[in-house]
Length: 194
Image 1 (cartoon, rainbow, N blue to C red):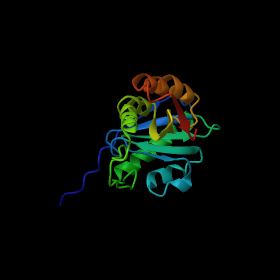
Image 2 (tube, helix red, strand yellow):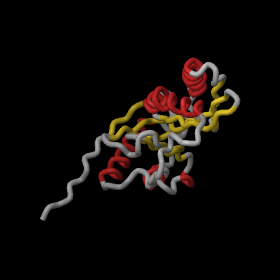
Image 3 (cartoon, rainbow, N blue to C red):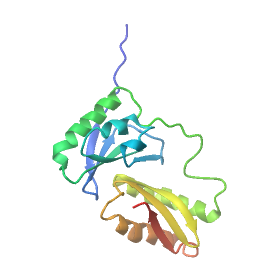
Image 4 (cartoon, helix red, strand yellow):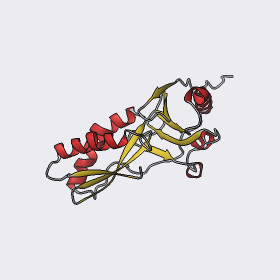
């Protein structure tokens, strides 16, 4: 009789600009491309048993899951070398057991909506093509929130939440790019919830 083979799970860790966050990168996709899940506390983890389990570590303050990585934000009172290997091993064992990181099935593309104006479609396209990959590389995500009278509002998640350099990223990076690429439409960019 054949035995089921365990899925090989390889995880490496990456630092990012937020000193309290660490990115745990997996060798396969955990979510659909462009889809992210931010868990600011244990109460918000109803669709992610993995995030719920990670909150069992006293030092875990926030969990973020997207594409092929999990970003964990720790409390200030502990240093990464004390907990990083324990968290890495927990994620590895969880995924080796064949469990899903997130239990959500999407019925439509979360990035685009047919009712969006042409300007909003352009903004979302720029965020998706130019900004999202850079923000994901730093362990976070950017999500379009709204556009009104020249102001684009975005949500910064994952390592970007509470990151000391998120304001610089927002103004020097995102706002500069959007105002340069859409000078007649975009005047300013603001972040919601940071």
